[in-house]
View 1 (cartoon, rainbow, N blue to C red):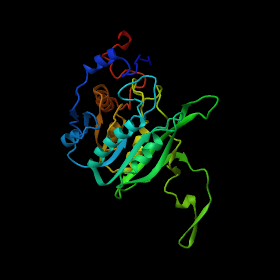
View 2 (cartoon, helix red, strand yellow):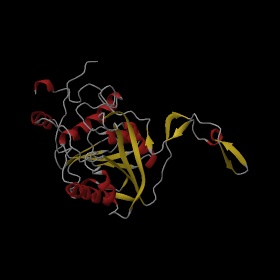
View 3 (tube, rainbow, N blue to C red):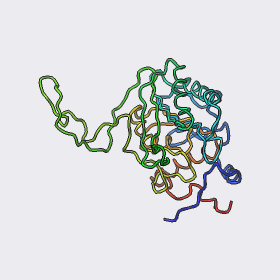
Length: 316
């Protein structure tokens, strides 16, 4: 398969101008899916007015992947680095808005990073910030282990992605199992009057998912789910695991930082409805196209093909 040339979609003003002309929705507009009722909102999640317009019911599950406040090669509105107090104020705004739309019993997952060179900001600061919201209870700190990482010969290679799990009230939780077979067999636990082996007690031949996920492949260009031009794509298996664990069919899921549309697509596959927000009209269009492409082809992404085939990026 020929690999299309697709640069980062936010890294060049000429490219952004070209792509903006293709965007079906602009700032403060929304696209509504006629088949399943999903909604894609183009807007700023820190603006409280967009919630009154588009959220007509409360949300069961929020999955958030905000900017990590870590310097990157290409600066953009999507990924930025700012003073930690500014970052905390930005976070307070979208967290407050999120809490207004959550059900009394609901779940929240937040992906976050830690800058090893700058005191592990904003991870530590964000955890302390969440203590300002007494109705939100911490439940778990999950690590997703990447198969590939970055590092030097003078430090441990950086392989992890951090995921914080919080709840409001008393939502349900559906136990999830990995694809990893159980290899430790034969240990006993007394149930009633019987000593039962783990095989006898087990509900699956595979091990349960814990708070360290080693069985999920990070996204790169050889995978079908890869979205060329996107720069911070989460594996759909990780989002599907969250959705399956902390919601039920027909529930409402939200994501304020849609980017490549993974939460929307995972909600579609899991028979949930999603309302997602994306500040950039280009990535709002990408989110819509990914859902449409899945329905047409059953593909989770484009692998190495362009999601914007009408544009020859090599000529821009």
